[in-house]
Image (cartoon, rainbow, N blue to C red; front, top):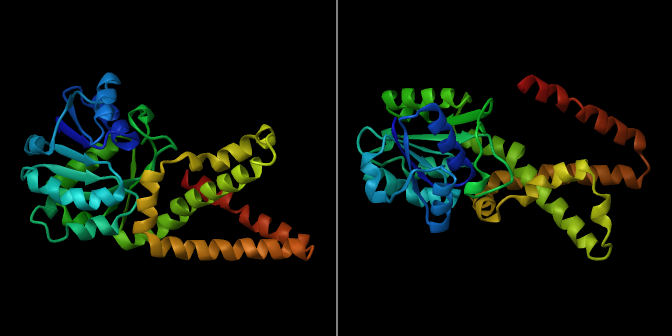
Length: 283
């Protein structure tokens, strides 16, 4: 695949472009973005080679749709309308059911592969793009059976070249599980940041006391609201379910504190320490 079109030249799309260029010296990367300054910046950073438009997509071997999930739902059908019969189109969004549903009846559904690379940072825009972002990261693929086999093969080879491991899920299961391991983490980080900022209004030196633990916990609060608000909207039911469970646990912890039940607090934390074994197993 030598003609690559990146729609949305930010962290994920830009990082993928950088790695594709390092893997395939014959590849030419074209950028499409509603933000003209992003395209200029991406050219200066050598992330893309040229600017392009949807009218150019017929020449594409691969199209990577890397835009906010609400925009992906409306833009993906337009992309599929313009590609050739041999073009592979992938998206990289954090919710999968809405985008799969949007094109389930499209005549070129077989050209599309729904993916979610579990990779990223809290930064956005072309400057956020980095080499080897996907190395040893998990890539969730949904509804693989609906993509033509030749294009499946091309996609899997690309993901292997990028260093990703593959998991297969249906879109509904993906959206439910990702609400726990990603979406809830971002909400927790945003709300912790909000709580501390509100306290800081009265105690100006509070951030002088913030150590590495606070910084790592609140890191996700630097993420783009323009990206995350549509994610929460699309995955509303699953996110609310996770919040209900999270709030129940917080209330229980508070109740233990109020009743001086520190033995139970110790037990709660000790039982949760098991998560390190789970994470070590994944790694």
